[in-house]
Length: 201
Image 1 (cartoon, rainbow, N blue to C red):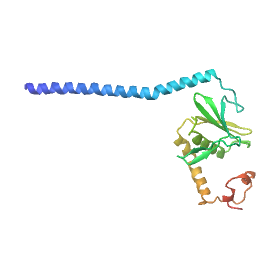
Image 2 (cartoon, helix red, strand yellow):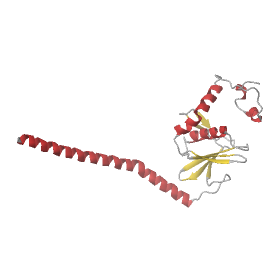
Image 3 (cartoon, rainbow, N blue to C red):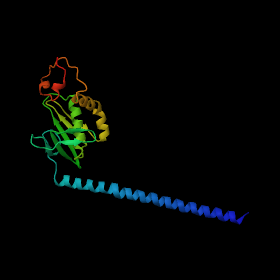
Image 4 (tube, rainbow, N blue to C red):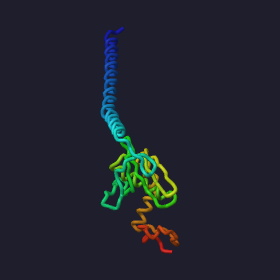
């Protein structure tokens, strides 16, 4: 048996063990770094929010949930929320702080029930208000109906729900397509910003 071959086998085995130890250490350092940079700040922020919520309990709103008003579109020079990524802008009726560092816009409607266009509008408000607030919920309040919406998903998923509507609205605004409306029978038509773009019956 060649002693040199045995020696090289031993050297290779030791080198493999050293490489394995180094790999384990690198993995451990990566996990520790991720924990320190990602998890620890989140845990601290959650504790801060929890302490704040305990020291200053949230009041009950007129809409049936607990929250503190932080924004209201009262007709004054309130800032318009803009999402440059999705080319959207909006001014929600209300935005409430609902605890744990989360916020929720509220869209108040004078109609008796909630319509699909109201839900699309709320999605736009969530996407734009997320540029400043951590939006996880939203509400639509009509005269005879109130509904809570879960927005814990990504902004991309939310935009996917209104992408077709958004594209069509943009084409109408640019005058590239005209809605085929024979005759308007809705009272809301007279206050619509896109009334001039519609076909006259």
